[in-house]
Image (cartoon, rainbow, N blue to C red; front, side, top):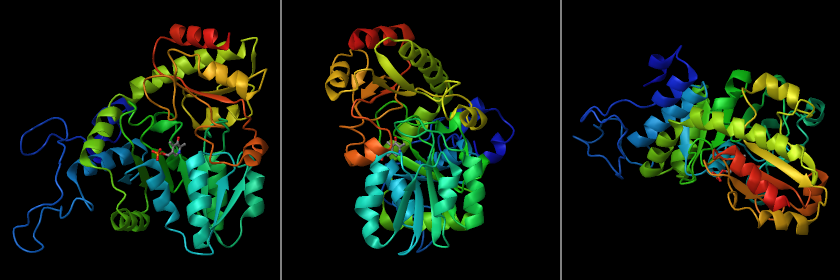
Length: 387
Ligand SMILES: *Cc1c(COP(=O)(O)O)cnc(C)c1O
């Protein structure tokens, strides 16, 4: 269904029906996979709104509508990966423009900024965004974008989105929030003043570890046109099969997220009480630094948890990482199955060691994507691995 038909409906109803209309030619309840590169025109320029599949594809259109509905935005755009979505946002910048970004964020975002875009004369300034004063200090007349990630990957730091949006508006800069960790089920940055929300749909939105995809949503029509121009000109679009997989994944987002949250809470407390564990990073702890803000802007705390052992060595961490049997050692997150990951050597290896340590990401840090298996099995598995 489209946004009008779903207005006033509950979140679960929106999640299940967003973007999905019965196929007009057959009545198929599921959006067909339009595996086509082009569309026949009746006479030159006479078509049904679809000309060439890099520019438009009906399976993608349905998904883009769903993305917008889930994030309470007007427009959605799908990309071939999360980083392709991020890439499109940075392509809004001109040489000389400044971007303020979180010092603790997804390693691939950092790599894209430093290794690809810096050479085009775009300046990136990294600050600890959990303290709003750090952002205010570096805002200049050239600040065109503030890039936030909350909760952050992998330290689960929380930034006050509404407070940053006040700063971005004063500066005349765009605010883009990477909402991958929370998913639209737990947090809607557009409602808190963001101009763009970005997702790696590879994670919770897809939910089944079977697709790579990204998205952007926005309310401003002009901004949508600029990003659509980048999407079709640069061509990082997802294929129709991948769009179908994400459409299908989204239908159970609420059911999965509820269980991720429940299991996440159980595992976070289990680890915190474990004698060999030093610190557990999870925004649901009442005494965690970001808890009050997380409670204000999120509807739950999710299934992402990081922790360190009292023996914070690579060796001790490696022993745990190679001993779990239910948790699989792999990058990525947000799928139904539990994953365990070593940020320093895996997801965040592209960040120089000094930068990592400075930001509190130690060599021994272990990150969990808690899946939706039986929590008892997950606890037992961690217990035997930690020893
Ligand atoms: C995975 C991830 C990305 C990148 O998305 P891809 O789909 O892998 O390109 C960006 N941000 C966060 C927080 C992620 O976890």
